[in-house]
Image 1 (cartoon, helix red, strand yellow):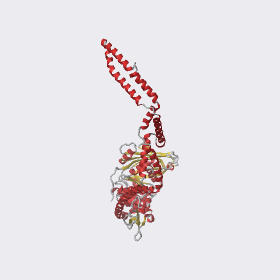
Image 2 (cartoon, helix red, strand yellow):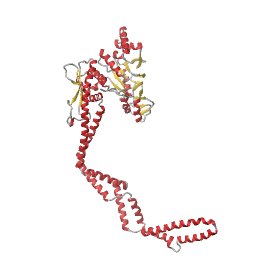
Image 3 (cartoon, one colour):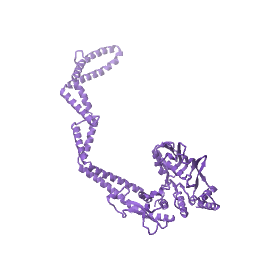
Image 4 (cartoon, one colour):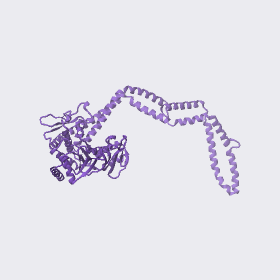
Length: 570
């Protein structure tokens, strides 16, 4: 049902390891297709997998640093256009499609990670990991024993992940609405106390009838009232000097300009000054009128001064309680009024919250019911295809079923609802005819789990297309014809992924597009692990070693040559 989605391919082009475990220094180039890593038990093949794990954000231990060294490091050159968007979101530098990821581990426990030379938290490596690679370790099939993972596998197969996320979102909204309603019921008494406090605050502020800007106006008026006598005297005397006195300024200026006019008639240089007469006269007359009006309107009223002082004291008291400015006090009062109005009718609020809950429940149940129906359809198809795959993996009589709780479709009781939907999903297995179906955790052996995992991956394509897939001895517990089938399935995966695989089986090793041999050797009382790409006779020799052990016979070499040639033709 699920086909590979188009995606920008991710490929690990180069891996550098320095002072990690038994590796003092190694630089390994990788190609597209299927790369197999082989070597004797204990040579350090899994060290390469652990090194990749560090680059993908796995927890680091100081014990992984090579003995006698202060720090170890792992660095990879990854080619992936899919990383560009994530790097840009974190303001990290980019250089085409190549990304250089580095991780350092110190014996002190400290360490650091960089992406394209920029320091990053290890959590970012974990964020990038799904876009780069997936490591399926030798214990990874144990994840199949956790029934909580089965629904995700089914959804991946049926292309239902988007619908499952929608159901989870609707469930989160439903729980939020339910919790709001429950909280309202618990907090109703507290709401009563809150309403009393709000009622007092609103009454105090609204009773004051505050007006924005009035404080400044009141302060100005207080200044006038407090100095009214001095202001009136100054205004009256100024008016008299300008207009009323015998020697008033306006009258004397008129006399001046009459003399200037006589001078201008005889001396032209005085003519321009005559133009200023009218303007000066108008300004002084306007000032005189302003002084007269100000004096007449100015009232010396102790009662009004008391009113202004009281009003300013009220505003100051409200500011100390509700805000640093008059405008903040007014805004606080409006906010309190809105909250008080919202609390004034608790029954209405309760009805509104119940309506929100019912709407959320309706959205959830509709989406969950549709998801449940589609899951059951996908399950029937998945069962058939997995059984067919298991038949190729020497488990011909095995029955595989996707179990649902509840077994029948339909809306279960409210307590059975969850973010996963209406049902629990669990994979069931019956390896032999006549035996009942039982959960994987109770019946499957390690070898069976490995084959079931490969069958699921072959059928469901559970990994995003283009991602590098890393397998660490997933062929454990199998051999013979089944091993060849497993190898071909890995090779089929390599058509859409870069696949790296650690194996002990010559049938699988012979199918490699690129073969790397991991060796452990002692030099100067130190043990070191090396990695070497082999081809031609060297590759035949390694496959022969895997067939025959320490003593390699000509028969083993001939068999190995046939396996390698057959793998190249397939």
